[in-house]
Image (cartoon, rainbow, N blue to C red; front, side):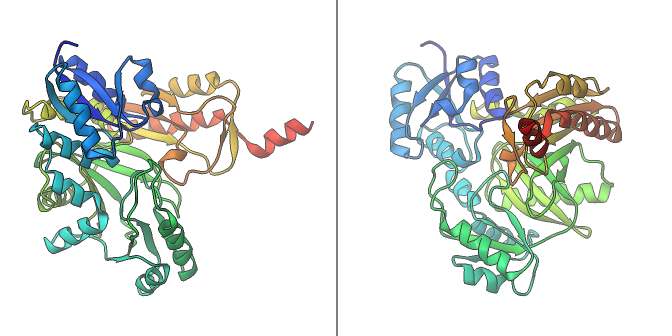
Amino acid sequence: MSGRLLLLVESNTTGTGRLFARRAAELGVVPVLLSADPARYPYAAEDGLRTVVVDTSDPDRLGEAATRLAAEAPIAGVLTSSEYYVPAAAALASRLRLPGPSADAVRACRDKAEQRRVLAAAGVGVPGFAVVSTADAAVSAAATRLPVVVKPVQGSGSLGVRLCSDPDEVAEHARALLAATTNERGVATPGRILVEEYLTGAEFSVEVFGTEAVVTVAKHVGPLPAFVEVGHDVPAALPADLERELRQTAVRAVAALGLGWGAAHVELRLDGPVAKVIEVNPRLAGGMIPELVRRACGIDLVRAQVLAALGRATHPERALYGRASIRFLTTDRDGILAPDLTEAVTRAGAVPGVVETVLYRAPGEPVGPAADFRGRLGHVIAVADHPAEAAEAADRGVAALTGAITPASLDRQEALT
């Protein structure tokens, strides 16, 4: 093999994982996906991406794989687009003396309990919280602040995050979380959970690169008790004082956690005029946010992250002043995707301003209410010159896309007749 290599330690299954590999190739390096199971990433085969099977949970096996690859061609950088493998990628980059975030800072940040403690000690606003390891302790911690949010200390995509309104709900959800010994990626989970104050203010994220806030994103969250993100608007339309509060809080949080290399995705809620950090993710945002930022602002965060891994300093600068919105297709009841999805996709794509319409599921596949990001069925992206226009187009597009879902009750009735 000729050419320098960019090692990608696992990936997210949708969204930016594919883009990381494509940007690497565009920048003249060869992407190589290191994965315990490359088949979980269909884009790898579709794009002809080179894959190496290795136990990515074992630092020594990762190091050995890197050594073998280095005998073929120089390794230029190490990255991941997956929340779960940021510590492994950071540790491997450090081991190879390549650019990357502090492995220790990333490990601490990935533990939301430790993250909460560090931020609170630094004076960065966070919700009230308690770290517990039993259902009884969860109930006790919730007693004075119901309703509360109960969630794992490690996780991604709202997995396991639930609003609990009474002690029985707290106990039931706490027991379910504590009974799990591994997450959906098969990675061992700590026997601790968070019980935290429920903030009712509007939710945002700030995309930070290095030590600077790049853009503020407005979030749309689906029906409680789950916290499924069903849409984003880029950039958020905000008064100057709230914009400043969100950006400054996000940057302070990143600094307090010892980050400051590459991308960080900081999620916040407003508590009156005060921004409080829900969590800091030491990685690029998911939910197609980087694509919205590219379309609205002309800033390619995926490319910037790849450049950072290659040791080529970059400062993302805004080149456009448009607006972009995404809305995710979800359903509030059991159903099935229509055998022919063409009509719904065509109607959604015909909405003025819609630039992308994607369904994640196959025709005829059963679907149901979303408990986390895995329940999202597709998305619509719209762009415009003004925030209201982009948001309205995305709303209309996803409404048209709902025609792809047939209620399960109707499907059963048709089968009976």
